[in-house]
Image 1 (tube, rainbow, N blue to C red):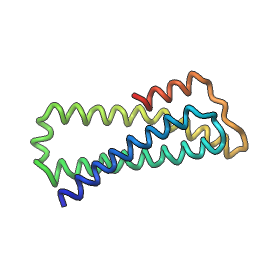
Image 2 (image 1 turned 90 degrees about the vertical axis):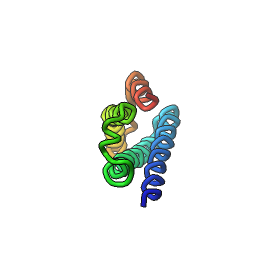
Image 3 (image 1 turned 45 degrees about the horizontal axis):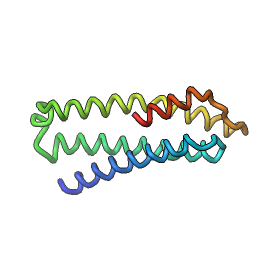
Length: 127
């Protein structure tokens, strides 16, 4: 069971990184209705993988590995966990923007966001 959860944890991490790379590539392309739909779908997969990464990681900490006492006394683990939460909170900004763009596409419009906003979103994803 330990190996299965370790595999799921690493798989979710790799999927998350891959989806972030795909988002960065899509954001360099012209913002078409098709690209907005792709961005929304990719962002959904990214969010799901982040959720799986968090849940499986916490299950590993509390039930399958060295125990929560070990991990919560480790500054490296606490730093990594805090950064994960911080980045997850920052990723709300691109997600909300992608949802706005998708709403415009559903209304039959092509989104035309401010280039500064797109740069900010790219910076957040790249970070």
